[in-house]
Amino acid sequence: MAILDVLVYPDPALRAMAEEVTVFDGKLKKLVSDMYETMYLSKGVGLAAPQAGIPIRLVVIDWEGARYALVNPRITEAEGAERAEEGCLSFPGIYEEIERPSKIRVAYQDEDGAPHDTVIEGFLARVFCHEIDHLEATLMIDRLSRLKQAFIKKKMERKAKAAAATGERER
Ligand code: NI
Image 1 (cartoon, rainbow, N blue to C red):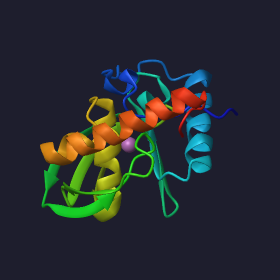
Image 2: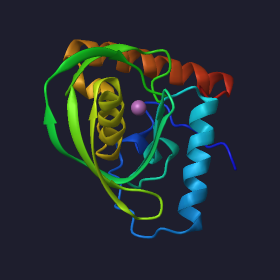
Image 3: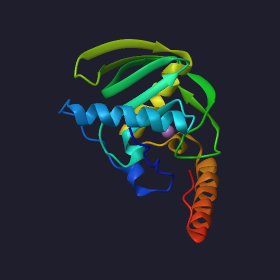
Image 4: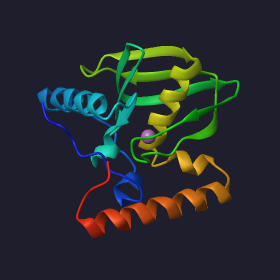
């Protein structure tokens, strides 16, 4: 296993559209286990492949022991709306209240390519929505007011500059 580099905003790779996964091989399984390891080390509850600079439709999630490796996930139904605070490994130190559906239906494949169709509610639905957004190049700040977006962009750009100046990568 290997620890992947998690890209931090404003890295342009976070805006790449993810491609459909068509090959279910050992390479994909290794990537899934590397993504789990990286996510656990970073103390995240979800990680999308584009956050590691790999533009494919793959997400790993572990929230309170509910583990999912989602390949080619699509939200097919959504209902309700809930506001709650969320964070993102690509925005370290930023936590914002974001509105998400309270219940979703998701079609996806597992790492062997087997199809699944499941209904998810509550905070786990929020995690699914956040991670699937990454596959569409949508970031959590895109769901905030323009004022908040501008504030966070400035803050992140300042952090990136400071990190570059000291030759360190922010994680
Ligand atoms: Ni995220």
